Structures are given as structure tokens and as C-alpha cells.
Image 1: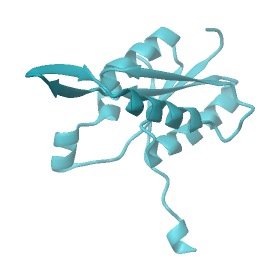
Image 2 (image 1 turned 90 degrees about the vertical axis):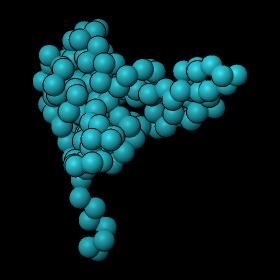
Image 3 (image 1 turned 60 degrees about the vertical axis):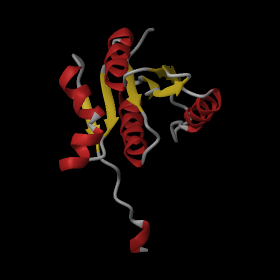
Image 4 (image 1 turned 120 degrees about the horizontal axis):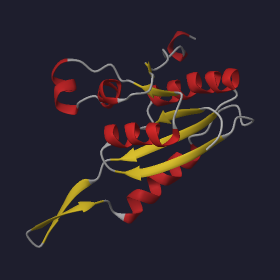
Amino acid sequence: MTGRIILVPTDFSAASRAALRYAESLARDWQARLVILHVHLPEPLYGAAEMYTGIYPTEESVFREMLDRFVPQDQSLPYEHRYVIGDPVQEIVDLAEETQAAVIVIGTHGRRGLTRLLVGSVAEGVVRRASRPVLTVKPLPDTSAND
């Protein structure tokens, strides 16, 4: 790939949408290409007393459709989608290296306490393991309730 790359991982949350907006601004300023990534964490499937790892094909198609709809508001920006199955932190870090991303722009939910301990934080894992700069973005405040 040529030119600057901005990697934007998404879980389709409000935080991911906010991250995409920041990434769009950087892409315009840097004349960069957006690589929008969704990493699906496979859930273990059990059957016949054996454990299989994978997802149902219909689930994959749903996530791929969601990814297809997760696009920059500014359609003049170059972008591409990537969909992978695996450990989100590892896949994000690996793709950042593969594409030589200038920056990773990732949404964070800001979970704390027991919820963070149980659910974990992909953004925190990326910040700790990435050799590339990482910009974490919280969801934009919902101003519709104030109207």
C-alpha cells in the first residue's frame, strides 16, 4: 500500500462512530486512506462433547453487512474494509504493522471497575501492545436529549 494509512477498528458502537469521525478529519488533513477493521471474536461452539471455535455463517454475514454500512460521512475519502476473525487486540496490532499505519484511531467505552475487569478493554490492550501511535476516542455526548 502506498500513502498514509489510518487504521480504524470498529465494534459498531457509538465510540467507534466517534473514532471514525476523528479519523476522517485526520485523513483529510494528511491525505490518508482509512482502513476500517472489524475483528470478530469467535465464540466457542459445543457439540458432540467436543468444542469447536467458530461462528455461524449467518452471524458472519450480519457482521459483514454492518461493516459494509460503517463508512465515512465524507464519501470522497479513500477507504477500505477489512473483516477478520481472531483476538481483537492481536489482529489490530498485526494489521497496523502490516499496513504501516500512521495511527490507530480506536473508540473506547470508558468502562471501569468490575465491568472492565470482566469485559476487558480492547483499546487498552492496543495502547499497551501497538508500536504505532494510538488515539483513543470516547463516544460523543448525546445532545438529542437537550433539544
